[in-house]
Image (cartoon, rainbow over all chains, first blue to last red; front, top):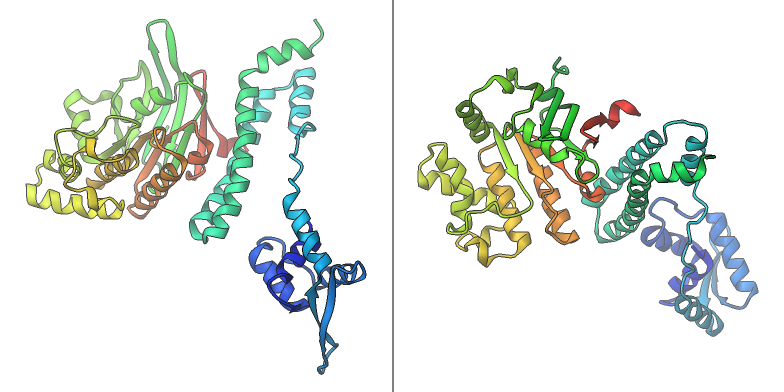
Length: 175
Length: 228
């Protein structure tokens, strides 16, 4: 995820301090990975340097000075461009699991066993996500569904591969 | 041998339909309050395993133990009584009686067990409320949606307070939103009643509502919890 663009997008609704930005980010997007303060301040310095944000005000307190940031016109254009650009689909052509299956066949190990164990591991993760979904709000449900659909796709591949192991063995093993 | 603490278990189950082997030494066990998914490719024997465990099909060989009783030695009448009083069933299609209203459908197994109409329908309505379909109580199955009909079927399966619920592809005919809600309601209700659920499914998102899974392949089962 582009943290810079996300923080810029959050600034569009009005100027905020770095701390408020972090809190808004964590609340909406940082479910499992909250931002570090360092990440926020280094990102804001970069955005400032590139003219995408400006300092809207500085509050002096007992601690360090608190800068309030505002998005610039160039920043709004940048967010708009990012939102309009489709994400590159992940081709998933490098699969460790595929490599393991082929190696198992080449070395006369039980490839079906590898697939069964992997299915179980995927299901374990799916149970955790399903449980979280049941207890969570709509945002949680959408995030978990996204992950669940990807895991489900892996499992469909796994079932198909499991059904094709005999054919695959004939192709990879020397005649 | 019966695994310690299990409510229902099977050992060395074999079943053939003519020349086709459906089960070839399958094993199974489930504890009270546990949801176990039975997974495997089409034709692997998972539905036959469920039918044997529920006493619907007699295995050719092997043992099935339910709460200390051996199922394979029971008469058809005793098996039928056991199914009515201790087991609940949810299938993919066509399980509701089309001539009865939804509340009458849910009350039916209670009536068969000897409950008075008024009492049976009161209990049935409680279950329809729990499954969020009390608004269709007076409608016939042909007048409700697939999702509503399946919730009514789940209510009927749970109305007799069964100790084991057998669910064979319970969401197979539903869209994913309805399917997931049915699974939530089914597993929540079963767990709170400490009932065990044997869930046959090929859908991994449905299996994710289980506590553990066994995989059936070529008539043999594999308990993945013990395998990992």
